[in-house]
Image (tube, rainbow, N blue to C red; front, side, top):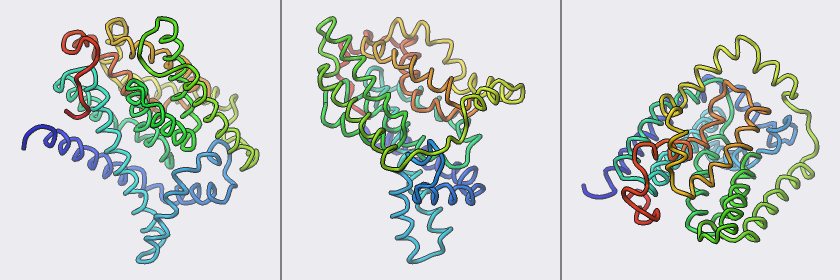
Length: 324
C-alpha cells in the first residue's frame, strides 16, 4: 500500500480500539443511567444542561428503534451508541491528524496524534453518559480547518451542528470572530470576513436561545456553588491535578515556546483558549478531563511548533493536504 491508505488504516484501527475500550469501561457498566438520561432528554424532562443537548440522543433514538426490530431494547441501545462511538472516535482521530498535518510534516503530525491517543483513555474516567463530548471533539478541529480555508458555508454548518450538540459549540463561531478581527486589523487573508463571522455567531446564539425557549427552563444539575465546592475539595483536587497534568503530559511545557513559534493563524485561534478555558474553570468539574479533548488539536498544534516550526516546511501554511 502506498500514500494515504496505511496512515488511514492505522488511525482507523486506533479509533476502533478506543471504541471498544469505551464500550467496556463506560457504556456497558453504566447502561442503566445512560438509558435513563437518554430517555429523559427525549421526554424533555432532563435537568439543565442535558435537556438542551438534543442532537445525539435524537439521532441515536432513531437508530435504536431500528435495532429494536431484531433484538432487545438494551442490546439495541448499546449497539446504536457503539456505532456512534466508532464514527466519532474515528472522525476525531482522522481529523486530529489532518489538522496537525495542515502545518507540519507527516511524521510530526503522526507522532503527535499517536502521543495524544495514548493519553486519551484518561478522558474516559468520571462520567457515565456524555456522548456529545466526542462529537464536539471531532467538530472543533474540523471547523478550524474550514475557517482557515475560508469555506464559510461549511463552517457555518459545522458551527450550527456544534451548538445543537452542546452549548460549548458556541466557541467555534466565536473563534471565527476572533480570527476575523485580527485579519481585518492587518488585512491578512486568513479566515473569512467579519460580517460572515458575526452572522454565524448570531445564528448559533439563536439556536441556543431557541432550544431554551422551546424546551423550557430546567433545574441545574449543579449550582455554581456546588461545582466550586466540589472542585476545591481535597479529594477532587487530588484527582484533578494529576489527571490534568497527564492529559497532555510533557507537552504542556512546550506550549509557551510553541505559541510564539506557531503559524499566525494558530496564534490567533489560541485566544479562544481564554474564554473556553474560563468556562471549564467556572462551570466544569475539573477532574473530568474529557472537557479538554476538543482543545487537544489546537494545544498539540501549538506545542508541536516548539519542535517543528511551520516555516521549516511550508512558509505560508500551504501544501499539506489532509491525510496526505
